[in-house]
Image (tube, rainbow, N blue to C red):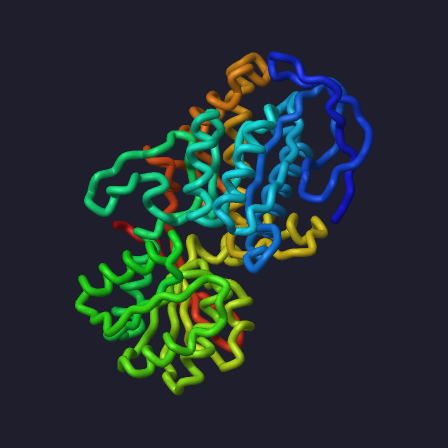
Length: 412
């Protein structure tokens, strides 16, 4: 990773303003970009994601994309008198680690907002910590509806648990129904076997898919569960083979999803496996020794590579020298970081060009009013902190890679 000059903190005033001097270099993942002039205030954007482990391909893309947003803001002097940097922490997709990271980020008084995490289950353990400190978080990837709409959302009772929580990703209510409608109507599948990984994201997504598939007239011919980090799913594969299913829906992530697809096909059951954005990664394809042509995945938004709004992001990312791709959530991570930057911009402008002493609370309030044209389209949030952008895409494995086959805006 590249090293750039940064400003070393020499004193922290009780007002929250920082006195800075130019020297030193930054560590990888500690972020910040562009040169810093003496007398400016450093504002930190936290990043929490799985930077190591099986989901690191996604986590590194999140971190790098926020870093790019910060570098862009500094280069363009987006907020006069303010220099941004990031503090990136690794949660390894473990809820307890995420909670510990949330506490650490809260303890850094310069942090005014956090991008992340990747996993909904991790976010459940972080939300309360952030809320108690009035520290806003914007997830580019969480999809579980309860995070923003409360535990009784399925009963039609919507109550936002934490005013500090926002996301640029569409929820599983949208994704699960979209997947069911595609599999039933477009793919013509009527008998599905549903598998989940017993995690917050996977089980929740599978349940929403199941309800919609049944509502459409489809039949769920069997269900089963797998355990994260296990590799032998032959028992589940045999159940799929014996069920007569013409398709499989998997609620979970790509490490288990790819192996499940492989083992199902080895039984002779040549049926497509479909999943959510958790399996939409090249590693899903490479995990399978058997050809998995025809497997399907939904993902939030439209293909970034086909968006005119994303051309500059892609060019800047490629020019940035990052060793990892921006992956599935890069555009949404950049937009999440930029939303925090725009909130800071509004707060500073309203305070005579200075960062206020109650910056965290003010940034949280300003995020609810943010609206701009981002990498992924229009970026704004509704009364629950959810994205107003309900675009989704279905991808199919063709020729050993994911190819988009249908994009649409979903209206519940």
